[in-house]
Length: 99
Image 1: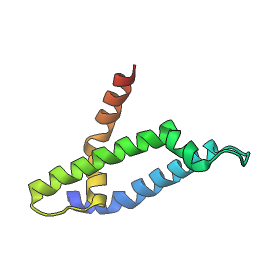
Image 2 (image 1 turned 30 degrees about the vertical axis):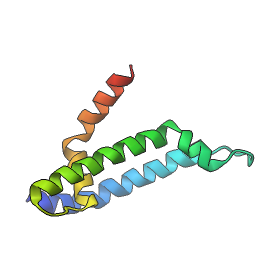
Image 3 (image 1 turned 90 degrees about the vertical axis):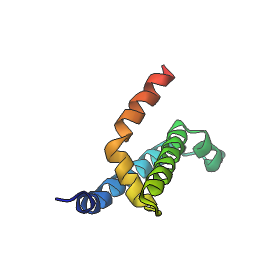
Protein backbone atom coordinates (compact mmCIF):
# COMPACT_ATOMS: atom_id res chain seq x y z
CA UNK A 1 0.00 0.00 0.00
CA UNK A 2 1.40 3.41 -0.97
CA UNK A 3 1.90 6.19 1.59
CA UNK A 4 -0.80 8.44 0.13
CA UNK A 5 -3.25 5.55 -0.03
CA UNK A 6 -2.51 4.69 3.61
CA UNK A 7 -3.02 8.32 4.63
CA UNK A 8 -6.34 8.48 2.78
CA UNK A 9 -7.55 5.38 4.65
CA UNK A 10 -6.22 6.32 8.09
CA UNK A 11 -6.98 10.05 8.17
CA UNK A 12 -10.79 9.83 8.58
CA UNK A 13 -10.41 7.25 11.35
CA UNK A 14 -7.67 9.11 13.22
CA UNK A 15 -9.20 12.58 13.00
CA UNK A 16 -12.71 11.37 13.74
CA UNK A 17 -11.49 9.55 16.84
CA UNK A 18 -9.35 12.51 17.92
CA UNK A 19 -12.24 14.95 17.55
CA UNK A 20 -14.64 12.66 19.44
CA UNK A 21 -12.14 12.23 22.29
CA UNK A 22 -11.49 15.96 22.48
CA UNK A 23 -15.21 16.71 22.49
CA UNK A 24 -15.83 14.12 25.23
CA UNK A 25 -13.01 15.55 27.38
CA UNK A 26 -14.24 19.10 26.96
CA UNK A 27 -17.81 18.11 27.83
CA UNK A 28 -16.59 16.27 30.92
CA UNK A 29 -14.75 19.40 32.04
CA UNK A 30 -17.77 21.68 31.67
CA UNK A 31 -19.23 22.54 35.09
CA UNK A 32 -22.91 22.09 35.74
CA UNK A 33 -23.42 25.53 37.22
CA UNK A 34 -24.26 28.45 34.91
CA UNK A 35 -22.18 31.17 36.57
CA UNK A 36 -18.88 30.05 34.98
CA UNK A 37 -18.09 31.51 31.58
CA UNK A 38 -17.42 28.50 29.33
CA UNK A 39 -15.08 30.51 27.11
CA UNK A 40 -12.81 31.40 30.04
CA UNK A 41 -12.92 27.84 31.30
CA UNK A 42 -11.89 26.54 27.91
CA UNK A 43 -9.08 29.08 27.45
CA UNK A 44 -7.67 28.30 30.89
CA UNK A 45 -7.84 24.52 30.58
CA UNK A 46 -4.66 22.49 30.25
CA UNK A 47 -6.30 20.38 27.55
CA UNK A 48 -6.99 23.44 25.40
CA UNK A 49 -3.44 24.72 25.86
CA UNK A 50 -2.10 21.32 24.77
CA UNK A 51 -4.43 21.39 21.75
CA UNK A 52 -3.10 24.82 20.74
CA UNK A 53 0.54 23.73 21.16
CA UNK A 54 -0.08 20.62 19.06
CA UNK A 55 -1.87 22.66 16.40
CA UNK A 56 1.08 25.05 16.22
CA UNK A 57 3.46 22.13 15.64
CA UNK A 58 1.21 20.75 12.90
CA UNK A 59 1.11 24.14 11.18
CA UNK A 60 4.90 24.38 11.42
CA UNK A 61 5.17 20.88 9.90
CA UNK A 62 2.74 21.89 7.14
CA UNK A 63 4.89 24.89 6.26
CA UNK A 64 8.13 22.86 6.17
CA UNK A 65 6.64 20.04 4.10
CA UNK A 66 4.91 22.48 1.75
CA UNK A 67 8.24 24.23 1.16
CA UNK A 68 9.88 20.90 0.38
CA UNK A 69 7.07 19.95 -2.02
CA UNK A 70 7.00 23.39 -3.65
CA UNK A 71 3.23 23.60 -3.08
CA UNK A 72 0.70 23.72 -0.26
CA UNK A 73 0.22 20.14 0.95
CA UNK A 74 -2.91 21.01 2.95
CA UNK A 75 -3.67 20.79 6.64
CA UNK A 76 -5.13 17.27 6.55
CA UNK A 77 -2.08 15.72 4.92
CA UNK A 78 0.24 17.64 7.26
CA UNK A 79 -1.82 16.54 10.28
CA UNK A 80 -1.69 12.85 9.42
CA UNK A 81 1.97 12.98 8.43
CA UNK A 82 2.91 14.77 11.67
CA UNK A 83 0.84 12.38 13.79
CA UNK A 84 2.42 9.31 12.20
CA UNK A 85 6.01 10.60 12.22
CA UNK A 86 6.43 13.11 15.05
CA UNK A 87 3.58 13.19 17.57
CA UNK A 88 4.82 10.58 20.04
CA UNK A 89 8.32 12.07 20.19
CA UNK A 90 6.92 15.59 20.54
CA UNK A 91 4.59 14.57 23.36
CA UNK A 92 7.37 12.72 25.22
CA UNK A 93 9.64 15.77 24.97
CA UNK A 94 6.81 18.05 26.09
CA UNK A 95 6.04 15.88 29.12
CA UNK A 96 9.73 15.66 30.03
CA UNK A 97 10.11 19.44 29.83
CA UNK A 98 7.26 19.94 32.33
CA UNK A 99 8.88 17.78 35.01
